[in-house]
Picture (tube, rainbow, N blue to C red):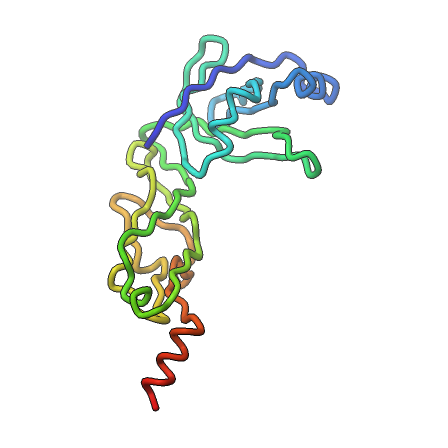
Length: 191
């Protein structure tokens, strides 16, 4: 899994006025959970851009006033009108305690159903998994070469080494949908 370096500055004031002042000065208020006492800090918007606006999942190497820790991003809050980042929650990870993270899904191969005129649809872009952060992959690769027309792959058929998938077992990850052309060809072949 990729790592992301982030520097932060500890916050002294935690009220509305201090938070508003941080946001005006192009800083984002953040909190680090998982330690004995929650650590409130700020990071600049420019430093956070590559962490927020990407489908990838990162282990964040946080440095807050010289103190280093590893964390994952747990929650983001955006302004409803301007889409500015209002707040970020980080969770400190250790090598012994499992974490829950959403990992992107990547489809591989040319499906049989696509060759027959169907359309491959990715229904779940991310899967929620539980495991140690050292064993988290960058993405979950699913081979779709055997997938026929009208067929689907459910979460129960997906397995990842040393990780537990937490999504509903009957949820559809990807499927080959019938197109009008494929329906017409199937109807003509059936006559």
